[in-house]
Amino acid sequence: MKQTNALAYLRQLCCLKLDKEIVIAEFLRAVRMIIPSDSNIFTGCDAQLNPIYAILEHTTPKLDFLIPDILPDFFNWDRRLRFTLWFSEHPISTEAALLDQQYSHTDLYNLLWFQNDRYHSVKSPVLVDGLPAGKLCLFRSRSQKPFTDSEQALCSRLTPYLAHALQARNGDEIPYCDNGVSGMLIMDAKGAVLHLSETARCILALTRQPTLSVNDRNNESASMPTLAELCLKLEAIFQGEDSDPHCWTFTNGLGRFNFRAYRLDKQNPEPGGLIGLTIEHQEPLPLKILRAMQHLPLSPTQKEVALLVAQGVSSEKIGERLHIKPTTVKDHVGKIFTKLDIHHRDELLPKLLALESSHAAPH
Image (cartoon, rainbow, N blue to C red):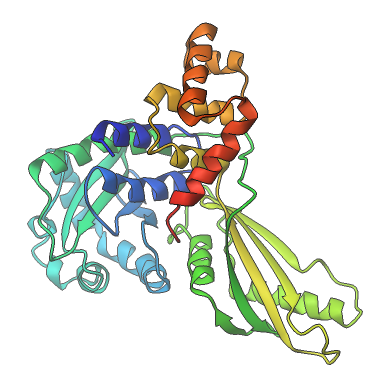
Protein backbone atom coordinates (compact mmCIF):
# COMPACT_ATOMS: atom_id res chain seq x y z
CA MET A 1 0.00 0.00 0.00
CA LYS A 2 1.34 3.46 -0.93
CA GLN A 3 2.27 5.66 2.00
CA THR A 4 -0.36 8.27 1.10
CA ASN A 5 -3.09 5.63 1.16
CA ALA A 6 -1.80 4.18 4.42
CA LEU A 7 -1.75 7.63 6.02
CA ALA A 8 -5.30 8.21 4.81
CA TYR A 9 -6.36 4.91 6.39
CA LEU A 10 -4.87 5.86 9.77
CA ARG A 11 -6.46 9.31 9.61
CA GLN A 12 -9.90 7.90 8.75
CA LEU A 13 -9.50 5.23 11.43
CA CYS A 14 -8.88 7.85 14.10
CA CYS A 15 -11.93 9.80 12.92
CA LEU A 16 -14.41 6.91 13.26
CA LYS A 17 -15.48 8.12 16.73
CA LEU A 18 -15.16 4.62 18.15
CA ASP A 19 -13.83 3.78 21.62
CA LYS A 20 -10.14 4.50 21.95
CA GLU A 21 -9.32 0.88 22.78
CA ILE A 22 -10.42 -0.50 19.41
CA VAL A 23 -9.08 2.44 17.39
CA ILE A 24 -5.66 2.31 19.03
CA ALA A 25 -5.45 -1.49 18.79
CA GLU A 26 -6.15 -1.28 15.04
CA PHE A 27 -3.72 1.65 14.74
CA LEU A 28 -0.92 -0.40 16.31
CA ARG A 29 -1.44 -3.10 13.69
CA ALA A 30 -1.95 -0.77 10.74
CA VAL A 31 1.01 1.52 11.46
CA ARG A 32 3.24 -1.29 10.20
CA MET A 33 2.09 -0.40 6.68
CA ILE A 34 4.07 2.84 7.04
CA ILE A 35 6.76 2.05 9.60
CA PRO A 36 7.77 -1.64 9.65
CA SER A 37 7.47 -2.69 13.30
CA ASP A 38 5.96 -5.36 15.51
CA SER A 39 4.55 -5.89 19.02
CA ASN A 40 3.73 -2.20 19.29
CA ILE A 41 2.16 -0.70 22.39
CA PHE A 42 0.32 2.44 23.45
CA THR A 43 0.44 3.49 27.09
CA GLY A 44 -2.17 5.95 28.29
CA CYS A 45 -1.03 8.29 31.04
CA ASP A 46 -2.10 11.31 33.04
CA ALA A 47 -0.49 14.75 32.91
CA GLN A 48 2.19 13.57 35.37
CA LEU A 49 3.09 10.60 33.09
CA ASN A 50 1.60 8.07 35.49
CA PRO A 51 0.52 5.06 33.38
CA ILE A 52 -3.27 4.50 33.44
CA TYR A 53 -3.72 1.75 30.85
CA ALA A 54 -1.81 -0.12 28.17
CA ILE A 55 -3.08 -1.35 24.79
CA LEU A 56 -0.95 -3.92 22.99
CA GLU A 57 -0.78 -5.02 19.37
CA HIS A 58 -0.21 -8.59 20.58
CA THR A 59 -1.36 -9.68 23.99
CA THR A 60 -0.66 -12.83 25.96
CA PRO A 61 -1.78 -13.97 29.42
CA LYS A 62 1.81 -13.50 30.60
CA LEU A 63 1.94 -9.88 29.47
CA ASP A 64 -1.54 -9.22 30.89
CA PHE A 65 -0.21 -10.46 34.23
CA LEU A 66 3.11 -8.58 34.21
CA ILE A 67 2.24 -5.17 32.79
CA PRO A 68 -0.04 -3.91 35.61
CA ASP A 69 2.78 -4.53 38.10
CA ILE A 70 5.81 -3.51 36.06
CA LEU A 71 4.67 -0.31 34.31
CA PRO A 72 3.58 1.62 37.41
CA ASP A 73 6.67 0.46 39.29
CA PHE A 74 9.00 1.63 36.49
CA PHE A 75 7.53 5.11 36.15
CA ASN A 76 8.59 6.44 39.54
CA TRP A 77 8.88 10.16 40.24
CA ASP A 78 12.53 10.42 39.16
CA ARG A 79 11.97 8.68 35.81
CA ARG A 80 8.83 10.70 35.09
CA LEU A 81 10.80 13.89 35.64
CA ARG A 82 13.57 12.77 33.28
CA PHE A 83 11.05 11.74 30.62
CA THR A 84 9.25 15.07 30.96
CA LEU A 85 12.47 17.04 30.53
CA TRP A 86 13.52 14.93 27.55
CA PHE A 87 10.21 15.18 25.67
CA SER A 88 9.99 18.92 26.36
CA GLU A 89 12.94 19.31 23.96
CA HIS A 90 12.71 16.19 21.75
CA PRO A 91 9.71 14.70 19.92
CA ILE A 92 11.19 11.18 19.90
CA SER A 93 13.17 8.83 22.10
CA THR A 94 15.00 5.81 20.69
CA GLU A 95 17.41 4.98 23.49
CA ALA A 96 15.97 4.54 26.98
CA ALA A 97 19.48 4.20 28.41
CA LEU A 98 19.98 7.92 27.75
CA LEU A 99 17.19 8.59 30.25
CA ASP A 100 18.13 5.91 32.74
CA GLN A 101 21.60 4.36 32.96
CA GLN A 102 20.16 1.45 34.96
CA TYR A 103 17.53 0.73 32.29
CA SER A 104 19.03 -2.65 31.30
CA HIS A 105 18.67 -3.81 34.90
CA THR A 106 14.98 -2.94 35.27
CA ASP A 107 12.07 -5.38 35.17
CA LEU A 108 10.56 -3.38 32.31
CA TYR A 109 13.54 -4.19 30.10
CA ASN A 110 14.30 -7.75 31.27
CA LEU A 111 10.82 -9.19 31.79
CA LEU A 112 8.84 -7.33 29.11
CA TRP A 113 11.00 -6.00 26.31
CA PHE A 114 14.07 -8.27 26.25
CA GLN A 115 12.20 -11.56 26.72
CA ASN A 116 9.74 -10.62 23.97
CA ASP A 117 12.52 -9.46 21.58
CA ARG A 118 11.49 -5.81 21.66
CA TYR A 119 15.04 -4.60 21.09
CA HIS A 120 14.93 -1.48 18.89
CA SER A 121 12.29 1.07 19.80
CA VAL A 122 10.98 4.50 18.97
CA LYS A 123 8.78 6.31 21.49
CA SER A 124 6.77 9.47 20.96
CA PRO A 125 4.42 11.27 23.38
CA VAL A 126 0.79 11.89 22.44
CA LEU A 127 -0.37 15.33 23.54
CA VAL A 128 -3.96 16.49 24.05
CA ASP A 129 -4.36 20.23 24.61
CA GLY A 130 -0.61 20.43 25.14
CA LEU A 131 -0.54 17.88 27.96
CA PRO A 132 0.71 14.28 27.84
CA ALA A 133 -2.10 11.76 27.30
CA GLY A 134 -0.09 8.73 26.28
CA LYS A 135 2.98 7.36 24.59
CA LEU A 136 3.24 5.49 21.29
CA CYS A 137 5.98 2.83 21.27
CA LEU A 138 7.02 0.97 18.12
CA PHE A 139 9.39 -1.99 18.34
CA ARG A 140 11.70 -4.12 16.21
CA SER A 141 13.55 -7.30 17.03
CA ARG A 142 17.28 -7.61 17.54
CA SER A 143 17.70 -9.06 14.02
CA GLN A 144 16.18 -5.97 12.40
CA LYS A 145 17.72 -2.58 11.77
CA PRO A 146 17.17 0.40 14.11
CA PHE A 147 14.55 2.98 13.15
CA THR A 148 15.89 5.54 10.69
CA ASP A 149 15.67 9.30 11.15
CA SER A 150 12.90 9.52 8.56
CA GLU A 151 10.91 6.79 10.32
CA GLN A 152 11.33 8.59 13.62
CA ALA A 153 10.05 11.81 12.08
CA LEU A 154 7.10 9.97 10.56
CA CYS A 155 6.23 8.44 13.92
CA SER A 156 6.08 11.92 15.40
CA ARG A 157 3.73 13.00 12.59
CA LEU A 158 1.31 10.20 13.46
CA THR A 159 0.77 11.07 17.12
CA PRO A 160 -1.79 13.86 16.38
CA TYR A 161 -3.99 11.17 14.80
CA LEU A 162 -3.99 9.29 18.09
CA ALA A 163 -4.65 12.49 19.99
CA HIS A 164 -7.79 12.98 17.88
CA ALA A 165 -8.93 9.41 18.61
CA LEU A 166 -8.42 9.93 22.35
CA GLN A 167 -10.79 12.90 22.30
CA ALA A 168 -13.59 11.11 20.43
CA ARG A 169 -16.95 11.15 22.16
CA ASN A 170 -19.35 8.88 20.33
CA GLY A 171 -22.93 9.56 21.34
CA ASP A 172 -24.41 7.12 18.83
CA GLU A 173 -25.00 3.45 19.45
CA ILE A 174 -22.23 1.48 17.76
CA PRO A 175 -23.45 -1.03 15.14
CA TYR A 176 -21.69 -4.39 15.23
CA CYS A 177 -21.13 -6.87 12.44
CA ASP A 178 -23.39 -9.91 12.93
CA ASN A 179 -20.72 -12.39 11.94
CA GLY A 180 -17.57 -12.59 14.00
CA VAL A 181 -14.65 -14.83 14.86
CA SER A 182 -15.57 -17.80 17.07
CA GLY A 183 -13.71 -20.14 19.38
CA MET A 184 -14.66 -22.91 21.77
CA LEU A 185 -13.99 -23.99 25.33
CA ILE A 186 -14.86 -27.45 26.65
CA MET A 187 -15.70 -27.41 30.36
CA ASP A 188 -17.19 -29.73 32.92
CA ALA A 189 -20.48 -29.04 34.70
CA LYS A 190 -18.68 -27.15 37.48
CA GLY A 191 -16.93 -24.81 35.06
CA ALA A 192 -13.44 -26.29 35.01
CA VAL A 193 -11.75 -25.84 31.61
CA LEU A 194 -10.85 -29.12 29.95
CA HIS A 195 -9.87 -27.76 26.54
CA LEU A 196 -9.39 -24.28 25.13
CA SER A 197 -8.92 -23.64 21.41
CA GLU A 198 -6.22 -21.18 20.40
CA THR A 199 -8.84 -18.87 18.87
CA ALA A 200 -10.84 -18.90 22.11
CA ARG A 201 -7.66 -18.12 24.06
CA CYS A 202 -6.97 -15.09 21.86
CA ILE A 203 -10.56 -13.84 22.09
CA LEU A 204 -10.56 -14.17 25.88
CA ALA A 205 -7.39 -12.07 25.94
CA LEU A 206 -9.27 -9.33 24.07
CA THR A 207 -11.93 -9.24 26.78
CA ARG A 208 -9.21 -8.25 29.24
CA GLN A 209 -8.02 -5.26 27.23
CA PRO A 210 -6.72 -2.78 28.18
CA THR A 211 -4.34 -4.45 30.57
CA LEU A 212 -4.48 -1.68 33.16
CA SER A 213 -7.70 -0.22 34.50
CA VAL A 214 -9.02 2.84 32.67
CA ASN A 215 -10.30 5.50 35.03
CA ASP A 216 -13.32 6.47 32.93
CA ARG A 217 -14.54 2.93 32.20
CA ASN A 218 -15.99 0.10 34.26
CA ASN A 219 -13.89 -2.68 32.78
CA GLU A 220 -15.64 -5.91 33.63
CA SER A 221 -13.91 -8.86 31.99
CA ALA A 222 -14.88 -12.34 30.90
CA SER A 223 -13.45 -13.99 34.01
CA MET A 224 -13.45 -17.74 34.37
CA PRO A 225 -15.88 -17.59 37.36
CA THR A 226 -18.38 -15.86 35.07
CA LEU A 227 -18.04 -18.60 32.47
CA ALA A 228 -18.28 -21.28 35.14
CA GLU A 229 -21.58 -19.72 36.23
CA LEU A 230 -22.93 -20.22 32.70
CA CYS A 231 -22.12 -23.93 33.00
CA LEU A 232 -23.95 -24.14 36.32
CA LYS A 233 -27.00 -22.44 34.83
CA LEU A 234 -27.01 -24.86 31.90
CA GLU A 235 -26.69 -27.84 34.23
CA ALA A 236 -29.61 -26.57 36.34
CA ILE A 237 -31.79 -26.23 33.24
CA PHE A 238 -30.78 -29.70 32.08
CA GLN A 239 -31.89 -31.09 35.45
CA GLY A 240 -35.30 -29.41 35.11
CA GLU A 241 -34.68 -26.48 37.45
CA ASP A 242 -35.52 -22.83 36.83
CA SER A 243 -32.46 -20.78 35.90
CA ASP A 244 -31.36 -17.69 34.02
CA PRO A 245 -30.38 -18.13 30.34
CA HIS A 246 -27.06 -19.89 29.78
CA CYS A 247 -25.78 -17.14 27.48
CA TRP A 248 -24.05 -13.85 28.10
CA THR A 249 -23.02 -10.78 26.08
CA PHE A 250 -20.09 -8.64 27.14
CA THR A 251 -18.94 -5.41 25.46
CA ASN A 252 -15.73 -3.46 25.88
CA GLY A 253 -13.73 -1.07 23.74
CA LEU A 254 -12.58 -3.87 21.43
CA GLY A 255 -16.03 -5.10 20.46
CA ARG A 256 -18.92 -7.30 21.51
CA PHE A 257 -18.40 -10.82 22.87
CA ASN A 258 -21.19 -13.42 22.84
CA PHE A 259 -20.94 -16.52 25.05
CA ARG A 260 -23.26 -19.51 24.92
CA ALA A 261 -23.09 -22.83 26.80
CA TYR A 262 -24.63 -26.10 25.61
CA ARG A 263 -24.45 -29.79 26.54
CA LEU A 264 -22.14 -31.92 24.43
CA ASP A 265 -23.63 -35.22 25.64
CA LYS A 266 -27.37 -34.61 25.59
CA GLN A 267 -28.13 -38.33 25.62
CA ASN A 268 -26.60 -38.72 29.07
CA PRO A 269 -29.34 -38.05 31.69
CA GLU A 270 -26.90 -38.16 34.61
CA PRO A 271 -25.77 -34.92 36.30
CA GLY A 272 -22.44 -33.59 35.10
CA GLY A 273 -20.96 -34.22 31.69
CA LEU A 274 -19.20 -32.13 29.11
CA ILE A 275 -20.27 -28.60 28.28
CA GLY A 276 -19.26 -26.68 25.19
CA LEU A 277 -18.99 -22.90 25.46
CA THR A 278 -18.71 -20.85 22.29
CA ILE A 279 -17.28 -17.36 22.33
CA GLU A 280 -17.77 -15.01 19.38
CA HIS A 281 -16.05 -11.67 18.91
CA GLN A 282 -17.97 -9.12 16.84
CA GLU A 283 -16.22 -5.93 15.75
CA PRO A 284 -17.85 -2.54 15.11
CA LEU A 285 -19.27 -2.36 11.61
CA PRO A 286 -17.53 0.95 10.67
CA LEU A 287 -14.15 -0.62 11.39
CA LYS A 288 -14.92 -3.69 9.26
CA ILE A 289 -15.97 -1.42 6.39
CA LEU A 290 -12.92 0.81 6.63
CA ARG A 291 -10.60 -2.19 6.80
CA ALA A 292 -12.25 -3.69 3.70
CA MET A 293 -11.49 -0.54 1.69
CA GLN A 294 -7.76 -0.42 2.47
CA HIS A 295 -6.68 -1.95 -0.83
CA LEU A 296 -9.53 -0.75 -3.06
CA PRO A 297 -8.80 1.74 -5.87
CA LEU A 298 -10.84 4.50 -4.19
CA SER A 299 -9.70 8.01 -3.36
CA PRO A 300 -9.72 9.06 0.32
CA THR A 301 -12.91 11.06 -0.23
CA GLN A 302 -14.56 8.16 -2.04
CA LYS A 303 -13.72 5.93 0.92
CA GLU A 304 -15.36 8.40 3.28
CA VAL A 305 -18.47 8.44 1.09
CA ALA A 306 -18.50 4.64 0.77
CA LEU A 307 -18.19 4.27 4.55
CA LEU A 308 -21.33 6.34 5.05
CA VAL A 309 -23.28 4.79 2.16
CA ALA A 310 -22.57 1.29 3.50
CA GLN A 311 -24.02 2.34 6.86
CA GLY A 312 -27.23 3.55 5.23
CA VAL A 313 -26.62 7.30 5.46
CA SER A 314 -28.58 9.27 2.86
CA SER A 315 -26.82 11.30 0.17
CA GLU A 316 -28.17 14.50 1.71
CA LYS A 317 -26.69 13.66 5.12
CA ILE A 318 -23.39 12.60 3.52
CA GLY A 319 -23.13 16.01 1.87
CA GLU A 320 -23.77 17.72 5.21
CA ARG A 321 -21.22 15.62 7.08
CA LEU A 322 -18.46 15.96 4.48
CA HIS A 323 -19.33 19.54 3.54
CA ILE A 324 -19.71 18.76 -0.16
CA LYS A 325 -22.51 19.46 -2.66
CA PRO A 326 -25.24 16.86 -3.40
CA THR A 327 -24.04 16.66 -7.00
CA THR A 328 -20.52 15.88 -5.75
CA VAL A 329 -21.87 13.11 -3.52
CA LYS A 330 -23.76 11.66 -6.49
CA ASP A 331 -20.61 11.76 -8.61
CA HIS A 332 -18.57 9.97 -5.93
CA VAL A 333 -21.27 7.31 -5.46
CA GLY A 334 -21.34 6.66 -9.21
CA LYS A 335 -17.56 6.22 -9.35
CA ILE A 336 -17.64 3.91 -6.31
CA PHE A 337 -20.30 1.71 -7.93
CA THR A 338 -18.31 1.55 -11.18
CA LYS A 339 -15.03 0.62 -9.45
CA LEU A 340 -16.72 -2.08 -7.34
CA ASP A 341 -18.94 -3.35 -10.17
CA ILE A 342 -22.20 -2.85 -8.28
CA HIS A 343 -25.40 -1.00 -9.21
CA HIS A 344 -27.35 -0.35 -6.02
CA ARG A 345 -26.69 0.96 -2.52
CA ASP A 346 -27.78 -2.28 -0.86
CA GLU A 347 -25.05 -4.17 -2.74
CA LEU A 348 -22.22 -2.13 -1.21
CA LEU A 349 -22.14 -3.48 2.36
CA PRO A 350 -22.23 -7.20 1.42
CA LYS A 351 -19.51 -6.54 -1.16
CA LEU A 352 -17.26 -4.82 1.38
CA LEU A 353 -17.82 -7.40 4.12
CA ALA A 354 -16.97 -10.20 1.69
CA LEU A 355 -13.74 -8.39 0.79
CA GLU A 356 -12.88 -7.84 4.45
CA SER A 357 -13.43 -11.51 5.27
CA SER A 358 -11.17 -12.61 2.44
CA HIS A 359 -8.32 -10.39 3.71
CA ALA A 360 -8.94 -10.64 7.44
CA ALA A 361 -5.95 -11.66 9.51
CA PRO A 362 -6.50 -14.29 12.18
CA HIS A 363 -6.63 -13.20 15.84
